[in-house]
Amino acid sequence: MTDRTVPHAYPMSVNYEMSTPARIYDQNFAEALSPQDLMVPVLYHGYYIRPRITKQLDRGFSQVEIEDDWYRVQLDVCQFTPDEMSVRTVDNLLEVSGRHAQRIDQHGFVSREFTRTYILPVGVDPLLLQVSLSHDGILCVQAPRKVQDVEPKINRLKIKMDEKGEKSCSKVD
Amino acid sequence: MAGEGVTISHWISCPVRHQDHFKKRDLGKFTEDHHLFALVGPAWAPLKVETGTGAEPARREDEDSGEPLFRIMLDVAQFKPEDILIQVFEGWLLIRGQHGVRMDEHGFVSRNFTRKYRLPDHQLQPGDLTAVLCHDGILVVESKERWWTASD
Image (cartoon, rainbow over all chains, first blue to last red; front, side, top):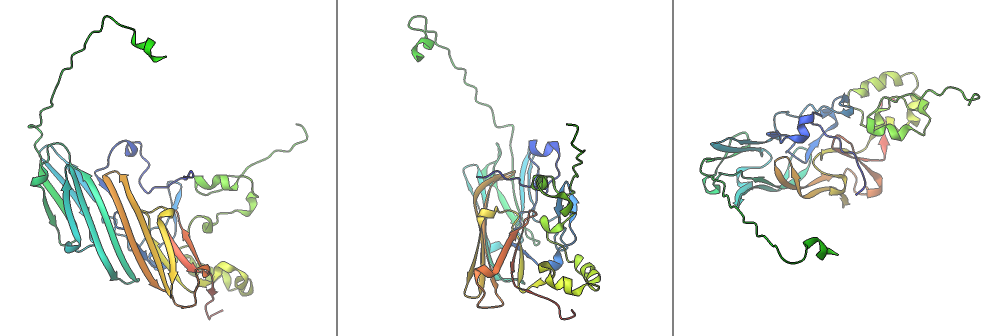
């Protein structure tokens, strides 16, 4: 692939690249715009961006909270109705998928499909997950978490001494 | 080199990633030109009308001053340019975006969508349309044909 600079809308902080943010945005996709929605470009961290009138800044997020005694994932799925969503777990993976057939909106016809996979942290039992969908379209998956029960399994390995025989480095050549 | 004069290179006010683009060109021609990196917003339209009242014939020659017959805008910030397919089929404009499983901060995600728009003209060919994917993630598909407002 050719080298390309990909500008990003997140603040350019040192910590951003290193840490996993608890909340990420821009999860709503294939949103149609009309020219009236765009405002005059403004300079933001060296890039011109066009603020949008219709953009709800607090929507379209995905949020993961991992605490010692509970685990919660919230995902904005306001583009989908409850019967178009499905949630399942495969081993320690939590798969949230949504699919809607062609529907009409104010700009034309649209159909969408997505699958998002979260990795369940240690101590979360996939059988105890509870899924709820709020009236404003935010899917919430939560489960209790038990960290104390998880004991590290320690296995001490024995080192076998080989006193006779060739040197291992002489075998290489 | 005693014979050489002093060269002053002017820094163009534009995103850093575009600076290379201007290195070998005549810098005087490039003032802050918004068309290079972003479409002008609607707030510029009244501004243009004011300046255009004095020189209307000149405006007619300018390709960019007209409005396209057809224009759609779509937010495809999550997709790469190669993930997007644009087709014209019997008076319909189809835009497909699809990306396979990719990793992000919260795990893995794959998405696809299809959008259909009714074209105003059945005879519109794919060659009559242009598509631009702006760096802020907005895809603009518009017709090359332009029209000018009746007030001119």
